[in-house]
Length: 135
Image 1 (tube, helix red, strand yellow):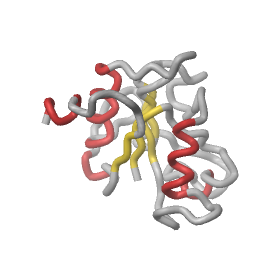
Image 2 (cartoon, helix red, strand yellow):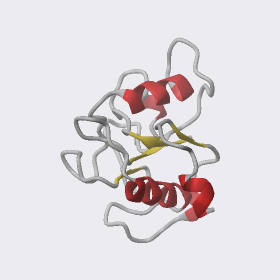
Image 3 (cartoon, helix red, strand yellow):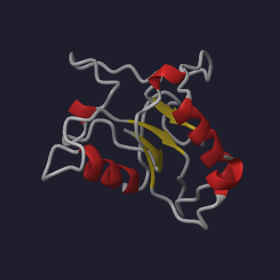
Image 4 (cartoon, helix red, strand yellow):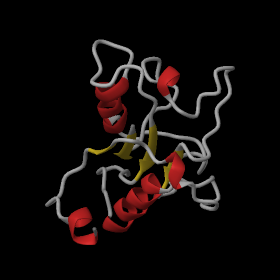
């Protein structure tokens, strides 16, 4: 499951086990699993959610409780919305959409389309034509 939006609190108790970057031993590999188009997170390679919306939507999709839409699914995310007003600039949404289709390492190198999620979700406002026009 891939999410584009305000990103996800990767260590949230209801989501940490499902995070594709969770190595299962208390460590995380964020390459190919997280991308911050906006440079808002504390480090460009550590997922964050500065307004909670992305964590909420991912929880609805794959969270541990109460009843997610896709139980046992793994998730990855691209942060394209943020700031005090939750802005989602078109250029960041486009970069996030491209990354979801071919995730890269934390340097934006070595794209791996084979690691693209089977399903992608975006939960941000707008007129809905940005990706349609590009495709």
